[in-house]
Length: 137
Image (cartoon, rainbow, N blue to C red; front, side, top):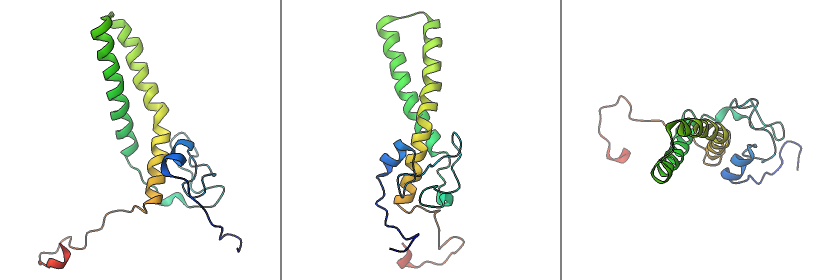
């Protein structure tokens, strides 16, 4: 093969998400900071300009961690009935640390899913049109 035209066997989105690596080669770094994406892969050169997970990672992380921590809080309250200070010193750190620990892998998973599924911004051909064409339904 010619240089620059290597064949890549991309890892699954969940694997590259958990490893926080490039969705094409599975080797290059995906992030340049805590949540800031690198401009491109330092191994295969994939441009990460396609990646736009928006608020998806934050929504999934807050929902998932929030449900788990709330369930644990309710269970501890019903079974042990501890004083309120116990909840303050356990629940808030669990929420904060749980969200911070899972945000990067979830964002990496969503970026990898966008790459694998070739996701792009939605386009509407009929936007602003008032004619009816049954072929577009």
